[in-house]
Structures are given as C-alpha cells and as structure tokens.
Length: 345
Image (cartoon, rainbow, N blue to C red):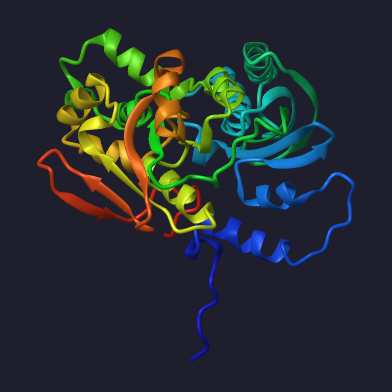
C-alpha cells in the first residue's frame, strides 16, 4: 500500500519554520542590506536588515479567530493582540518599535461596529507602544484572520539574539509566569469548578490572557545595558523557549533551572488547585506570558536585577540539555515542548 502523505500537522509550527529556514539558507542573496547577522537572524525572533549604524528589525505574526482568540475576547482585544505579539518580538531583539502593517481577512457578515472596535484596539496598542499603523490590506474570508508585520530599529551594538549564551551565565525572566495559562483555564472552566474564587482575582487573571502586554520597556533597557548574551520572548512556554536558546547556540550549551526560583504568582496556585491542574506544567508548557527569557553575565545580572525587575531562575551549562532541580532537590532532564498552533489530530 502507498504510504500516507505527511501533512503539516505531522510536523508542528516550529518544525515547519525550521524546514523553511533550511531551504531559504541555501539561496544566495545579493543585497546591500544583508550582512552576516542578517542571515543569522533568520531563525531568531525577527529579521535584521543592515542600515548603517543600526539594524532595521522586521517581524510578522498571523492570528486566526479559532486558534488564537478565545470566544470571550472582544474585537478591541483582538486588535490589541496583533500589535502586542509583534512588539514582543521586537522587544526580544532590543528594538524600538516604529510601526506595524496589518492585513485583515474579514467575514462578510462582520458588523461595522465590530470592525471599528478591531481598529480601535490596533490604534490603542500602537499608542501604548509609541508606534504607528503604517499600512495594511483587507480581504474577505470565512474566518477572521489578522496578520501583522512589525518594524523596529536597534543600534548594532545593542541587538539581542537567541544565540550567544556562555557557560555560567544567569538565566532570568522579566516577570511572573503562568498567569496567562491560569486565565485561559478559567475561561474554559464551569462556574461550579471555580465557585468561591474572588471575583476581583478572577478578573485580574483573565485580563492577563485577553489583554497581554509586551515587555518593550524592559527589552530596551536590557539592550542598552549590553549585558544580555541571549534573549527571546515567552510565547509558547518556558521549556520551548529554553530549547530555542540551546538550539540557536553554535557551541553546546544547556540550561539548569530551579523549580523553587520560578516566579509563579499565588493566583496561579489558586486556579490550579481549584481545577486540579499542575501549576508547574502551566508555566513550563502553556506560554502566552510575553515575558522575556534572557541570559546575562553573573556580575552584570546583579547590577541590573533591581532596575529592570529580573528573576533569576537558573544558569547556563554545557550539558546540551534542560535540567530542572525540583523542590525536593532532585534533578530531572526535561524535553523542550510547548504550545503548538498547528496540532496533530
């Protein structure tokens, strides 16, 4: 019998991107805007184009209603999110956000009120990050789909990338982890499962899921410090992003982190207790926190941790693997995994 043809769901989102990059790197480009770091950046959070003393930074994200937008998310919040996810990639590179181009595929029965709300969200987020909506396109589709292309700029000596971590570097994050996962879990829960949860706490947790914020200010401060050896944003889960840092490095590096050092807010533990979920699993594999994951020289970390608000969670090793020291002091090897937008059925 003929073998079944593989589909994209057999690979998953990250493997498809790696497949594309492997093929594109075999093509020779002749451009005054390309240099060695441009090609290196093809597998990073954003692409770098040579602009004299600076790099022009370009990134793109595609969000669809069924995959990325919970039913409870308003059109205004959808608009905000397409800007936020792009700005988060710019933040991970240390870039100042300049503008965004947004292409929209819209259902024909979308009301003009909902369209206006969508645009309000985009423009409000642009104002928040001090950037401009600089173009876009619209088309008709059965499903609402938003595609954003974010543009930023960063001095060449300040750019942050996924590669560059060295043995002994501190591994740190810019803020609490797991709130987004907790919020999405609450949205899916029955009222009876969360009876007794403080309404104010519930609203706060859900807001983290429906209105995420990019860590642009922290990214700019980290870039200007020139202390960061590698960086990425946490969109697909902490383990997945740790794996990205390891895979991007030319030399063999690994990461060891401590469960007790993970900045997990009390609200995450409350939700996990009510819903019989594992808070650690929510932090490690769910994502959507949009915090930055960075590696920094140990001395510089101590200088910057208070100013920027950094949480040390571990350090860089040469193991080539991810190790976690649990609360009992036992060390476990963990496999990089996280949320995939393309799921195998």
